[in-house]
Amino acid sequence: MRKYTAEAIGTFALVFCGTGAIIIDQQTGGAVTHVGVAITFGFIVMSMIYALGNISGAHLNPAVTVAFAVAKKFPVRQVVPYAISQLAGAVTASLLLRFMFPANEMLGGTMPAGSNTQSFALELVLTFFLMLVILNVAHGSKEQGMFAGLAIGSVVLLEAMFAGPICGASMNPVRSLAPALVSGHLQSVWIYLSAPVIGAVAAVPIYTYLKGE
Image (cartoon, rainbow, N blue to C red):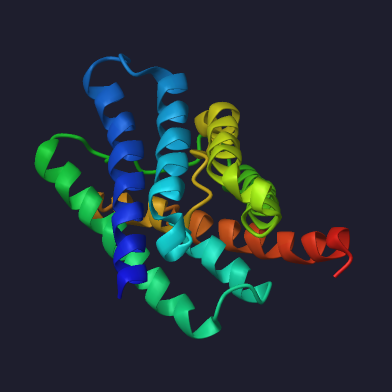
């Protein structure tokens, strides 16, 4: 239960701070800026990895949990409890943001700025690279592990910086599902439920091949 609680708290922090930054940027006419939103996502991911990584691994993302299970680096029986915990934390954050900002329509949700195909491809590739980094730094040498939070947070920041204006750079099913559920904007949520999982799982055989395992 400590692991599940840690995942819920970490994912709550991710959605509260990340989508909160988007909402506050909209409420203040751009005071946070797109760059500020990307930095917020990167820094909160990095912080939660350092804070909770030794408890639950700080997946904060069902796509990451599924990919770890496929790579045989995580027990399959814990995938569903982890995903439930992550969703609970994310939805709680979106509900709190709805209470705080009742007039905001999207609550920081992700929507394609172009075509669905374009955003699907972007989300798949973004999550592929994110998972490739996670697999290498989270299960590498002790020295690599010390820098895991910095490396993973930097990838999130980088990808949110350049891809955010087109697809939202979610890379995380519950990060997109929670604000969609609470705001009622579910029309494109299938992209963000499927593409990150496919991208994360696709990184596993590439990682295995590169490692020679």
